[in-house]
Length: 78
Image 1 (tube, rainbow, N blue to C red):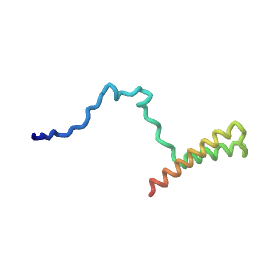
Image 2 (cartoon, rainbow, N blue to C red; image 1 turned 90 degrees about the horizontal axis):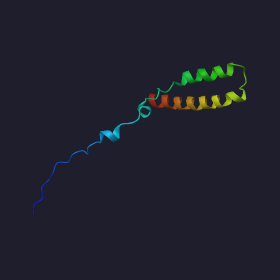
Image 3 (cartoon, rainbow, N blue to C red; image 1 turned 120 degrees about the vertical axis):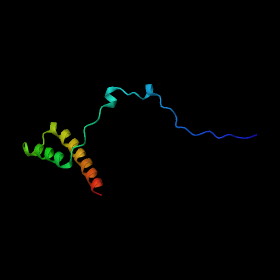
Image 4 (cartoon, rainbow, N blue to C red; image 1 turned 90 degrees about the vertical axis):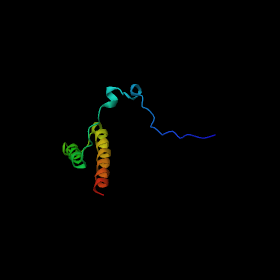
């Protein structure tokens, strides 16, 4: 009994299954730099010296964005 070898081929892709909805294909905007986010944080504080309760959520979101941008810039620099 002899065994014949067959060439290995990549699996075929199903084009119908690969199509995504327009929303899924949309590209996210590039992340903002830490300097840009920091400027927005400073503007929040300069608007009165104290954060109103309704601005605290925006401030916390900006801090998270700034922190992520700073980490990304450090990784890029390394």
